[in-house]
Image (cartoon, rainbow, N blue to C red; front, side, top):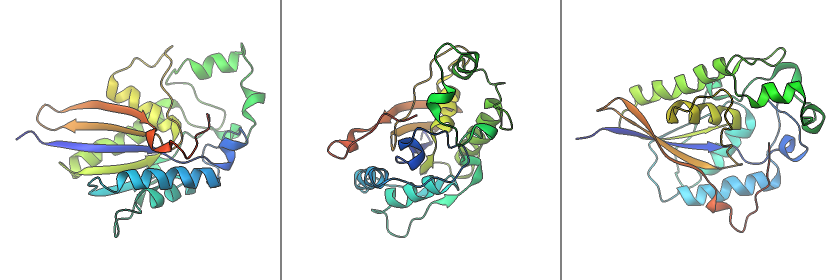
Length: 215
């Protein structure tokens, strides 16, 4: 029998930082009313799916999203873990995005290049982000083989998971972004010891709810 561990990956709902176009990183920022509706809509979608276990970032926006996503699974709560936090961008946390991302600037070029060594001042490198987030998923696959696991995390963290699973060379490429409460699916095949990307950034549950294009 082919043993597979399935992961349901979710980005948190819209936050106040998203709405106000600010870089959040590890800063506390709450879900907006729309963000809660997005998470509740996904929760209705997931109610019919078997979920054995759930984890979320310990940042409130992810933890609150996880709670709403699990509304159809009474008794199941997401275990919070700091390894699932967003990319720490250090001194840039709280900055207005339009003031930082000036087209053609050296900063934008470094940010968009996806180089794993790029480290915002006072923050962490993309390499460190990838190691802690994807490392968490690898441990989950080994500790909970054959289960269906919900993971609620953040945009940049999900990008590094996509790069890792799909084998995308990160430098110089444009990596698909996940929208608020975008649902992605990956699996780990224990027989051949390989990861597989099943789907990415499914947002059909947001029809009639509303989705904003957010950073």
